[in-house]
Amino acid sequence: MKYKKLAAALITVSILTSNIAPAFSLGKSNKKEDKKTTKNKLIKSQVTEYKFDYINTDWWKAFNDEYLNEYIVKAIENNHDLKIATLRVEQYHQMTKVQLANELPTLSAGFAPTGMKFPGQTNTSGMWAFPVMASYEVDLFLKNRDKTRAAKKEWEKSKIDERAAYISIASAVGGTYFNIIRADKLIELQKEIINDRKQIYELMAERNKVGLTSTADMVAANKAYVAATADLTELEKSRTTLLNSLAVLIGESPVNSAQLKRMPYDDSYLVKIPESIPSEVIDQRPDYLAAEAMVEKAGIDVRVAKKEFLPKINLIGLVAFGSSAMNTAFNWSNILGLLGASAMLDLFAGGRKVANLKLKKNAYEQILHDYYNTNLKAIQEVNDTLVSLKQDDKRYKTNLKVYNMEQKDFGYTTAKYEEGLISYLDLLQKRENLLSLNKRVISDKIDCNVDYISLYKATGTKLQ
Image 1 (tube, helix red, strand yellow):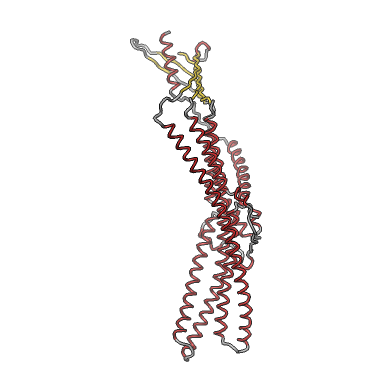
Image 2 (spheres, one colour):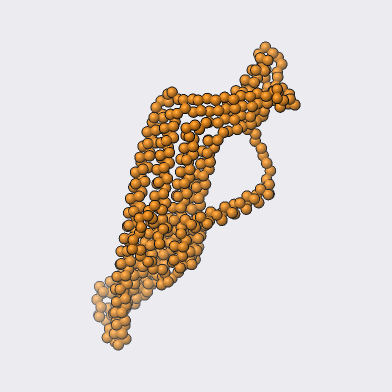
């Protein structure tokens, strides 16, 4: 009897100090794989749907540009930064599940064969044991529940950050696309300017030979021609960079970026300027919502830090079937049972809990000020973007009027040339001025479209 009690004690100690659980290795099941594939397809469809909700696709359709809409869709489906953002959401989801598991009891079972030899004896004895153990931390003060709430806030923030990433990428695609359209048109006009300056230089060279134009004027014309060629090289370089950026944004290789299609400038959309933006749109911005979620989490963290001063209450239960013979291991007479409870309170922790509480309170204050700052910066960004859009629109309309007047004046100049009142050189110089002014008008119009996209981003896609 003495040895039986000792054996039972040894088994109990071994179980309480280790986590024994069975491990199984199963073969692959085609039926399981088929179900998994079907489930993944369904999840992918649902994910794609809410991703498009993130960016307010109806707003993008207002541009009436099939190429732009196609690139937006490709970016949503293929952009790697967005895939990372989505994976991060799943990461925080699983972290929430891990924390939730701490609220639940744990149950483990296993098989623990034991061999024993006691002092003073030459023979050995063995025991077949099948222990089942349950443990549970009683969450009387809801500390673990609060930790789960804090984890859910992190998960919530990751989803808000995901939405912000989608808005940012969609905006980048739109802005890059319109800048490519601008580059296309500017390159086209720059080639015309180069052709005109080349003719101007050649005419001046001919006139210089007969003494009608000074050498200084001829050299200046040559410098203008060379400078125009250098400007074309810079424009082509800028367009290539923009095309490469667009390719990466939509998840494609930059190798074939030159083949990316776009609408011609003349058909590009001109924005409608809103008179004002309601202040309520700030409440829908991802950064504002994320900051708000972090304030709530910080408040929960402070509450958890306070509850660390309270005692921990644990329950433990053990059932073990054991016998020296396998065929009698599960007899009721061979069962060992244990039920215990404990309430433990730290009497001294070296000031760790006090310091932790102060740390959490300090973090809460920082996060709260960050929330206030985010609110102010959001208002500033919306106002600045709206002002920029209005000013660029005003500049565009002013330059457009000047261009129209210059174009009308060029018509008179052309008539004078046809009547022989002015030289072809004068006509070319007048035409160059017209082309240069047209480049300014084009840039102003594209600036308005890019500003409009920036305003869409600043309002969290809630721009009407």
